[in-house]
Image (cartoon, rainbow, N blue to C red; front, side, top):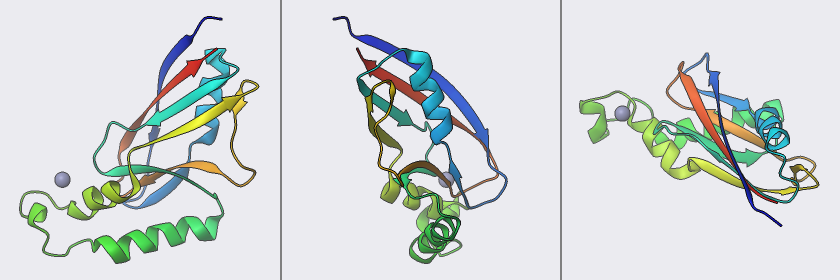
Length: 138
Ligand code: ZN
């Protein structure tokens, strides 16, 4: 059996400073294009002020994630980075969330739980955000 490597890029445009976007369908599409039936999908954002997390796309929870991040990263607080840029909170939020997710692929689809979705968390929008998807497997 030969190992396949697929790499694709998608982009999304966020419309608010804080926003949680469900990007699962974009990743599913890449997995489908890759032809990989069993392996792993990596979802990566090449940015320092938005994050990736895997969780439930329930609208109330998506708002809770934003409120949680605001409460703990304190936008506008006298962080050192705010002396040169007004987004220290977003860098800190990304350090907590991370910038990628690795998801198993089985039967040519994402092998995720019933309630799991891949969420891009914007913390310094609105911006265009790139999503790099790499699928490796057989
Ligand atoms: Zn910055």
